[in-house]
Image 1 (cartoon, one colour):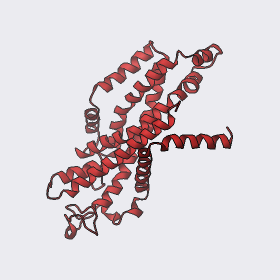
Image 2 (cartoon, helix red, strand yellow):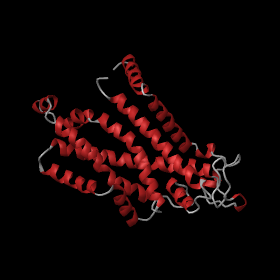
Image 3 (cartoon, helix red, strand yellow):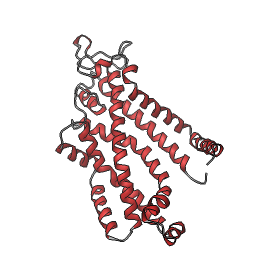
Image 4 (cartoon, one colour):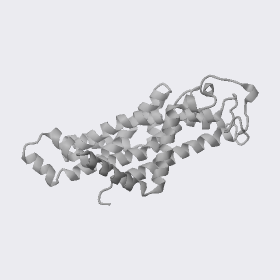
Length: 287
């Protein structure tokens, strides 16, 4: 592919993506969240408040000029802790999806290509067991067995996330295995790995990428739920769910301790959902 062709393809992808203005808004929110996570120490006015810090002279202050989101009962700036919470939320998303997606896609390819065999039966019945259980309850059960913390939350969410990709890719691979280009590859003696990863997988990637973009919000929400019940990131490290849980004890008097973390979660999830819609439009063929 020449540079001119690549440039033309990128222009076409951007045109499809930008036709929906909400997708562009979502992209801006995604970039803003990533920048906040990377440059949290520079952006926040009180970076020391994200660690062990107590200042009772400024405790429980309502939103004001010095603290735009108010302070908690320990005098810590809520805005600062929200920015640092983005780091933990996005880190969980990256780890969970980078592990669960390859596992789920690989197992889905194997089960779909060998449809009707013992491999199909073992893989898909195992996936069905995981999918039959409520996702949040399964994640809580796994996290409860482990030591509470970010690592345990990542393990718990990853363990319950891979079957969704296995089920998605299984359906596509089961259909594609009977297409002419796959049969032709088999007739000329192509290896099984070549058929799986060079013939079938590329035709599944657009749907997988779209689901990944949409799943970011769900991973953040599940992670916040685990943090809310004390199974996620542990104090003094800030986390969205943990901040909501702490603030709920003082509702409605100290409403800002709960409202702003909840709005931050909704803002990020909404942005990634808009971004996922744009990815779907961009990769959709025939438009």
